[in-house]
Amino acid sequence: YIVLGIETSCDDTGTAIIDKKGNLFAETLLSQNVIHLRYGGVNPLIARDLHRDNIERAVNETVMKAKLQFQDIDAIAVTVKPGLLFSLQIGVKYAKYLSKIYHKPLIPIHHMEAHALVARMYNNIDFPFLALLISGGHCLLTCVRGTDDFLLLGDTLDNAPGEVLDKVARRMKLRNIPDYSQLPGGRAVELAAENAKTFEVFEFPLPLHKQRDCNFSFSGLKDAFSRHLYKKESEHNIKGDEIIPEVNELCASFQYAVAKHIVHRAERALKFCILRNYIPVDNSTLVVSGGVASNNFIFKCLQCMGNAMKCNVLRPPPKLCTDNGIMIAWNGIEKINSGYPSTDMELIDIDPIAPLGVNVKDEVRY
Ligand code: ATP
Ligand code: FE
Image 1: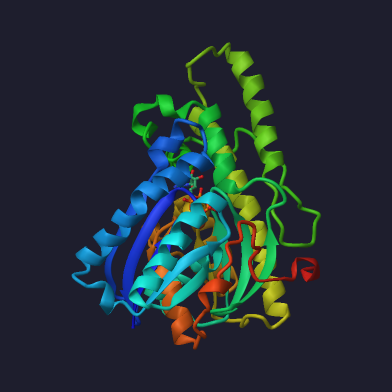
Image 2 (image 1 turned 90 degrees about the vertical axis):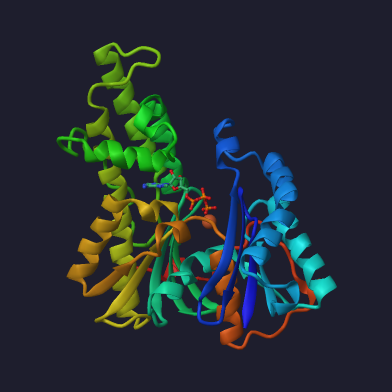
């Protein structure tokens, strides 16, 4: 089996072709990141227009690089949910068109499920496992019991971690530091933190520490940071583009606070799943994915927690942590391998909100 994957849920036009065993034939990723940076966030109408301009090229290039003909492809997997409505529409419309003219079955894919499952492409991970998806738009914990069987254990009540790291990077004016100017905010914060003498110049409160569930909240950290920085900037009499002397230490303190909160909630989810027999006591697996998973400090903190609980903490290679077509194609393969029935084209619905899996958030009490 060979599957073409198409991803257009946000601001990346991604396509890829892989086979049943996860061998990658070719991929194309046309990112709009640089354009949206100018607007300080993704502009949905611009995203739609760029997807429209890029989709045909992204598909054709991948087919060409794979040295295949359309006839060689057995199915087309496409992200139908969740994401930006207008962005999703471009990918789905084009996938339907290809499906119709080449008579290939369509496989609708849930973007967040694909983020979690792609770890199985490179690692030998059996169901069930725990997944932590941390990115610019999401923060959630899920127990993955099968290709189509997800339990939603917790998600964020307000911001996503990538979003607040981006905000902190902006507030700290990290773009004015030449080494960081081209980097995503979270990566800039990570690098600044590596140069810090201490990560305890400011101690943040641990969010939701009294809540016995697995939800997340980052807005309190963000506000506490803003208030503290404002005070420090006034003390140093910082103006305009000037950068505060303890920039590295402040980044390190904030990153530490984000890491602590994420680890705290992930540990709770792990214990809850073990107690409920959702995952094994020993040799369990925690998959970490999404853009923020590429943060080495946060990942190491998660590994320390995992080690203490005999849990194997893994992440996909960095380019598979962020949005891409490979994970969509792989999810298509997973669905075929698990006997997914062919879908009637008319029944393929786009759903911008689509929560992940069965919601058991309220059951989580540890
Ligand atoms: P989603 O996939 O949830 O729709 P998205 O497209 O914004 O959202 P990704 O592309 O997965 O998410 O991730 C982008 C986010 O990851 C940005 O907020 C960026 O700052 C953050 N990020 C990237 N590299 C790092 C890093 N090394 N450390 C922390 N955060 C990082
Ligand atoms: Fe994503």
